[in-house]
Length: 200
Image (cartoon, rainbow, N blue to C red; front, side, top):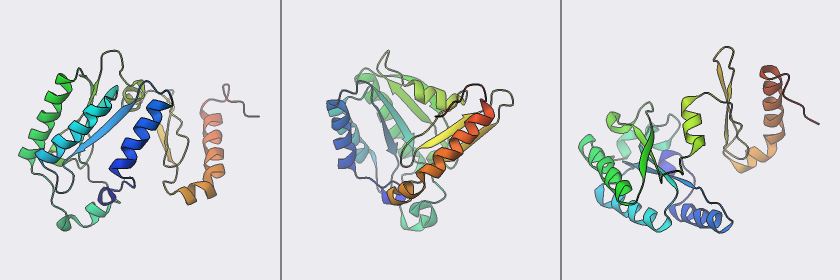
């Protein structure tokens, strides 16, 4: 996880899923990344088996994307990732698993530097599609991200211009700067929606 720039463990993901479910969340999206270092069909099948125990309402199957700042991208020779044929088989495995578990595809998107030049596919149980996933991909609505590592996307309908703000991922950095980030977002909102924003 650290190699691809993610700073949580598999167990933390599982724990947070059940915490959210037990706190009453009824529509949870989960992401699975295929083609992680040293991951093949057997490892991806294990991920699907674990996901089956949780049954999130929606599931996005991502092909690994090489992020600029990640350890893996900076040291590609150190990490072995799946070849295109294996990644395609993993994607097929995800498609079969989602069908067997009552999910249907509802959105698709591509990223730069994606393994196998594939795409990411969002699946959902009927009627449980994640509006957030659709809206963020369509880039038709302003989305405000709150919290550590959250991303905001401001859409100016008159010009079509999109401005993004990323909160720091590091908790200490976030705590030191969150007020500054909030002010920047409010200033931007007041500029693009002057009639709608009132902050006391």
